[in-house]
Length: 175
Image (cartoon, rainbow, N blue to C red):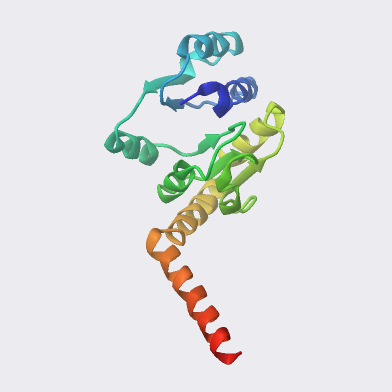
């Protein structure tokens, strides 16, 4: 994982804003990257004690961490579909992602997550995180995230394609 591409600096800066608003939180950062650079940034913003760098996780531990989490944040400068977004939703996590993440089409604003166009605006990032810290909002969006994931399983995708093919064949037979 390339922390620079994933927008970790924006996340850390947003968390600094939340800390100044007296929120308590813990950020789990999974994957490999330049941890010393981001530890320094976390120290500068006063959130170093709130961040845990796990390193690369095997699938079992990754799932365990998803299930122990409350929110998933990925502010990538660019990314393909990003199965991790769907995995997080399957664990019932509302997501906050950048508009550069391919999975942005799965996110319904204020329903199952948030899509942020300008991730460098850490005030906006902090505000979205803060909204998810409200228990009622989190609960509602968590349920919607799970529902989104269940509608996007491989079986469901195959079912949609079969339906499209049938419609195409029926239209062809009519003409």
